[in-house]
Every structure is written in C-alpha cells, then in structure tokens.
Length: 233
Image 1 (cartoon, rainbow, N blue to C red):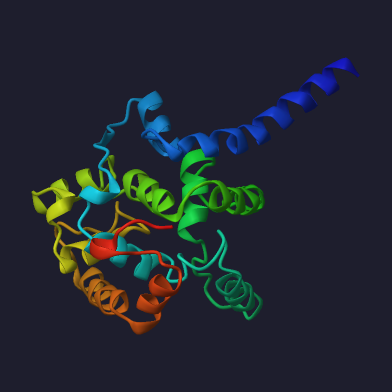
Image 2: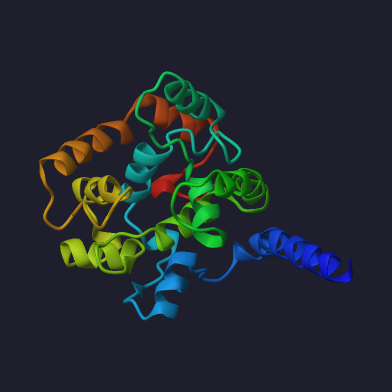
C-alpha cells in the first residue's frame, strides 16, 4: 500500500512538473526533449539561440502561415481545426496535422515525438496552460529556437538558416523563410538546402498565405505585431 502511494506521488509530481516549469520559460534558452535525448545518446545536436527581434520577420510570418494560421487568436488549441481532423478520421480520410504551434511547443519542451493518444491527452491541457502563462511572442520565439530544421541535428532558426543558406536567420528572404517553414513536418526527408519540387510548391503556398488578408487581420485585431513584427501583447 505504501509502495503504491509512493508511486502515485511520483506520477503526480512528474505530471505537474511541466506546469511548474512553463512560467519559468519566460526567460532563458530552453531545450527540447528531442535535443536532450540526442545529447544523452551521443547523436549530434547543433543549436544557437537567437532572440525573436534578431530573426527575419519573414520567418515568423511563414511559420504561422504554414503551421497555425489562427495562432494569434486561439488560446493554445485551434478547436475548429481539431474538429476537421476528427471529421476526416471518421470519414476514413488520411489523417492530417491539427496541432497548433503552442501544442508543438508543449510537445517539444515536455513530451515526446510520435503519435500517441496518451501524449495528446497530456498535450492539450498543457498547451492551454502555456498559452495562459507565456506571451504569444515568447511561445513563437521558443518554437523557432527548438524546432528541428535540418537532417542531422540542426535545431532552431539560426542553425537551420546557416545550414540551408549559409547566412544567419536575420538575413532570411521571404522565399528562404517559406522554404524553412515547408520542411518543418519532416526536416530529415525534406530539404530547404536542396528543395525538391514538392517543397518548392509548399514554399510558394506559404509565401502567399503569409500575405493573406485573413492572417494580416488576425495579427491586427490581436495587436500581435507592430513594426517589423514587433512585440506581442
């Protein structure tokens, strides 16, 4: 009985730890669980943190357009996109991603990669909590510094940009930013350095989406951006 109680306390502590750590990530340079795992296993890891203000404004625009068009208006979960994914699954259609940037930050910082109902169950409330305790700009800044952006352990915008284009993230052009956004789902199989036809087509789509009126209105209505993408409120 005592053993069971101790095990239960350990499980509860592990589950609560991300909720205690998330507010602390307003500062510092957090790493992802995948980065930590690669360090432990001896796999290569390259990441140079870069502040949001030092990233080309085209990259956040392209990433939001590609990954989470309602990022500035939802509260961690895009319920509309989630319903569409569920409807597609019920109709037997191929499953597509419905995770918001905030959900991906929750997964990257505290959970594990791969599809799992258990992980999703943990990810949902954690994404809501992260959206509550961290500013939108900080969430996006963290995402742009922990996302995997290369085939051999390149993480973050700075390292991904240097690997793909030979210059820092501050110098990314609209097309280069869109190419990086296009490889986010699978940077091992997709390449911004030597993009195939599919990646180039996606990049063109994301460049157009980044300038769409709906996305611009979303940012404007939420006072999310100022000059040069400015600071989120």
